[in-house]
Length: 400
Image (cartoon, rainbow, N blue to C red):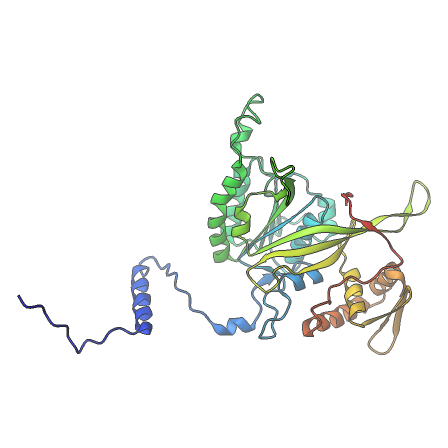
């Protein structure tokens, strides 16, 4: 029997028509459910910043995604909506302060926040001092779960509902119900090694999908811990809480490290005199992973004033000095305001006080500094200015 000859009139499909056919097939498959996964890319979106939540820190906003892209637009100057971030570092490195500052900023801008506190250690007084509306349940929701699973249930409910910011403090502090239910004799002996990490490994893929759909941002805080059985093997012997899955499903991973503790004169009621005490810390933030901008491996320093939170004013002074917006002569700082008036102060603490108390001075300085870092000088813009009037020591684990 003779073989049928191919129809010469039938043209071979082109590459472009193949994708059109596939799109049509996919559309028909998902037509009944209304859940078509096809994405139409709008290139105009590349010329505007991605939807984001401000961090409450000028330095962190710039570091995360404030460096202009090839279109001259900051890709994402803040925590990305619809994404997951992971902040890790040693104790007293500012992780919870940064989370509370972000919560305060979100609530101030009309958003809502859920704080899942597995550590049962949040200070409502400190949170309120930073601007978190702890007394408004319509804007701030605090949960202190008894088990890891209980907190995760709340997490998914918030993520699916579209809560703007969900803070997890910390991802390794939740105790699985399996451990809770053990007797005292069993604890520490029958627990599965890596159980917490295994739970997060199964949770994070679905959580990433839910956040992308609802626009929620989940911020997981992790402390560093010593690895088991690594003594004498060399290399890095520390690891972050929560397991390796946090590396894979996050849009932003950032490490915090206290590099300096700063002493200034402060009144001591017991001694009834001014004494030197630690009043602030310089924190170095390093972007370990970024899927939203070219900030990979960038680092910058910001300041935290104990009891007050992120010190944007001190950071503005440092950046303004680098750009020549603030003139420095010896220990004196000088800022020429609009209209020609001069604002002067001795030392960073003295000049900072002048900026904060003079009407409109902080806003003027912030506008000039933000304008400068948006137009150039990114290489050294975030370096910290010398502070000869402060006593500085290398960071130890000094309680904030």
